[in-house]
Image (cartoon, rainbow, N blue to C red; front, side):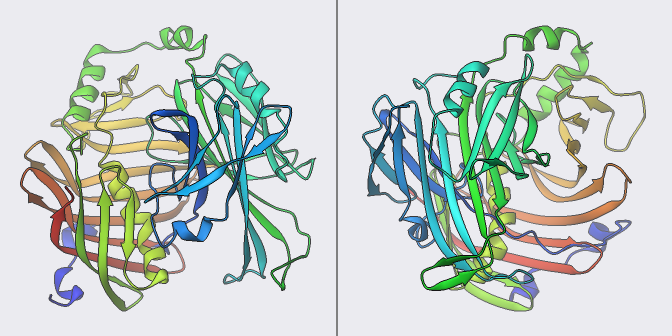
Length: 460
């Protein structure tokens, strides 16, 4: 195989006119997730990853095999027996328990610019009777005692909102929160108040997943090592039913049939992997920080990714960008329908602006059946994605180059940006990524990473 640098030459048009202030790639934050076991209402399963839909297999999954999981019914808790699977741990015996919760004290970690600390994983599934939950049911189930130091409770705060409250060892605590919503591929970041409260929009039916982190500031000893504090990562999942007031709210939006059709056509024109996607494995060469490693990368039919590059540092660097790329090529289900309307009448090279009229103030630009710009609010920040090039594949459009820019909502200052260039290849009737180059930037540094995949083999 040729040297990696020979595969990647970012063309000048890709960077032309872009204010590349660059940024170091964000460190991946892996969480332990508990979810219902498919086709088995009396069982649950635990996976490990940044998102519940992107799961790690060995060797990363092996690091959290010590998770203790319990079935809770309000009267007590029963420990569940663990069985190892390829990319998750399965736990039988949940039966009719409405809540499942678990935890793992991972160990003392030492990170750059941080004193040593104990990392603790916690995870909660509000399952009820296995059906979508109303706001009052979510609130009731969240009150069941889990015996977890970091806890989250909910209470209704309106027709389509819940008030979230975080507590650490029984006392309110400020926590960082990342929220995954039904049909969305991006996590929305927020932070609770000093009293641990945050309003959570629940205006769509489906699965919600939350990642929370908090620190206690107390010295701790674990495994014979000293830590200055404990950092707890808590995941929470629940399936919400459609709020009773959401239909009324939707009718208040003045929609436009032409805007709705334009957006729907663009969604249907994107290439994605459907239910028949078998997964693939490929030889991999990855370059970062002036270093180069070789190995394999495998993506299974459920879009779980296994990295085998012989370097944990390299795999940690690659995981966020490649995981996001794979996740965005999923979603082969029903086309989402938004109460869309025209934002304004501005003539723009990327097409006329369309309001999605969702809770994030999202608006897109669409041209020639392609979504060329995405704008969305994320609490104190907002981001804009500009698609620079698509290729017309056999089943629709595939992205080749795009930028993502993040802004501070209070000052409108550019915080960071990234530029990604991807090439694709076809195996039979399946498209797979061939090369991925990313330029991450902010006001302190610029980092360029590159991945070359070759000798692809479909999984049968």
